[in-house]
Amino acid sequence: MAEIITRFAPSPTGNLHIGSARTALINFITKSKNINSKLYLRIEDTDKERSTEEFKDNILSSLKWLCIDWDNEPQIQSQNINRHCEIANKLLTDNKAYKCICSENELNERREKINSGKITSKKICVSCENNKEVQSLKKDYVIRIKIPIDGNEILEDIIQGSVEVDNSEIDDYVLIRKNGTPTYMLSVVVDDHDLGVNFIIRGDDHLNNYFRQKFIYEYMNWKVPNYAHIPLIHGEDGSKLSKRHGAVNLMDLKAQGYLPDAIINNLILLGWSPKNQDDEIIQLDNIISKFDIKDLSKSASIFSYKKLDYFNNYYLRQEKNLGLFIDYCQSNLHLQKYIMQDKEKIIRIFNTYKKDISKYEEMIKIAEIYFNINFEISKNEQFQEDFNNYFNDFFKLINKIKKWEYEIINLEIKDFLKKNNIKFPILGKPIRYLLTNDYNGPSITDIFMILGKKQSLERLNKYKI
Ligand code: GLU
Image 1 (cartoon, rainbow, N blue to C red):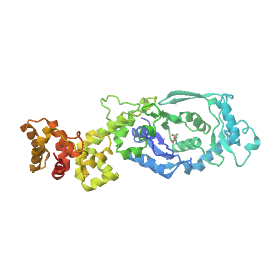
Image 2: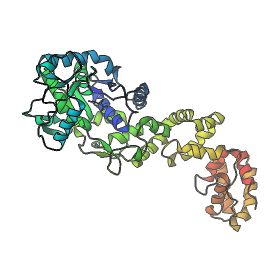
Image 3: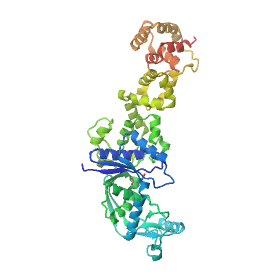
Image 4: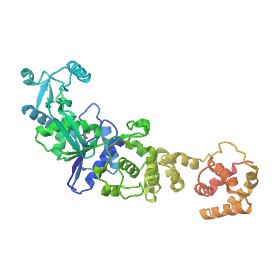
């Protein structure tokens, strides 16, 4: 595969969204297929009003958390303003751009006419380009690019295929605003060119921008990169994935206890499936060797939290990921308390319950039951007579156990059931309830092991027949 220079170019106007994380991931995977390829990170902070340092930090830490790495230091777009202006001025000199002084009102009137179909040409300014006075102004103008009225452009997009747009559909967009600052449309092309970017992988909400941006490449005689516009991800109701569907920011998913491996596994299978693989579990190394961006589907993919939960449950159950659970506990206010009190106990609770949970935060409620020193049975249930008849003997049996070990406790309980000829639910369910306030849950031996002998007896002792 040829050497690829690609980039991920988020605007720090919000926290890293799962959709953008997918774009970053696909960039990362694509560049990782060849050791000489590069992925640059550019923070596109030219919208000063909406960009913040916090959002920038959030984007960087979210990418790091997902193990998405980039080459060199992140580029900060606003530091290149002079270069962007230089190119705009070059386009002016080359007669590929013009100064415009149209007022907002004039532009709005014209825009209305264009949108209502009264005018077919998309040209938003018709008076400034040929006005010598305007063209010789020294300040208070915007710079607009000149787009030819005739002709068309065909983009051979790696994912979208052949896309054709008539030039008449493109307006003479602004390169430099009245206050002298460059627009995204200009900066992105200049920075990509200067970085040597030869492959642009981004969301398909930018597909139309290609037909605008390609003029700058053309006018500057710069080589146009290859493009792959990735379809956006939607929620299960078919609308754009948003907060309504669930957590959509990486750091929120992290706080809930999702693992990077699960998120990567889930994201990469949206619109792609590895060849010759039976199950859906696939990790980064394997993805890098099997993934080819050409195989990505061009239709929008549905993001399912149920699927994410399935993958997360798979990864959190792995013995090798226990350390991630401990890290999570240390970062979570509730669990931190428990891990400081008794690390072994919280690990035992986790190992007992992990098959049934889809994310770490579910452990808060579960652990609370076991760490509660003032535990009370929520309602004073009176169990069946059968149970009451056996309870005192069962209590004595548990009390007599000297070695508090799983096998021993398990065997004692089995013997007890056998000797008394009782079916497990008659005894097991009420005992589980007395120990955890829940009829359902892990085996009572597991629960005894978590609580330890003293606490188990204390809890059982609260039951008065
Ligand atoms: N900064 C743009 C955005 O966050 C991305 C521009 C691009 O990839 O060309 O949507």
